[in-house]
Length: 147
Picture (cartoon, rainbow, N blue to C red):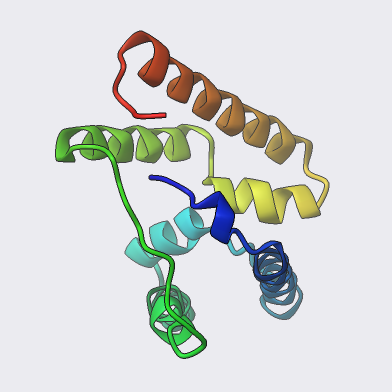
């Protein structure tokens, strides 16, 4: 994946971050639930009858958001510089890490840190550190990614 730094728009990034923070805060204040994606999706697989609707609506909103964003302008082009095998392995490793870490980066990084959770701070530091190490090893040791 590449980022076009000449087209980077800090104001839209700030607005997006504020919207994510406000949505996470509203979600916990109004529903008493944390807006971590892995928890929402995982809970859907074992949800009771009254617990399924809001989870489906939450996930439908995530899927609909890019389509709605297109109303305000074109989406940034996405370029993934990896093969299917690398992407599949990465997905499996992220899923495994989410399971062992008791949550995903959105749950810990956005929702957990905003609640001053020490566990989420430790998890977020591990996510970022593992990501940095992975990119370094993939680029410098194995030469898998451009850049």
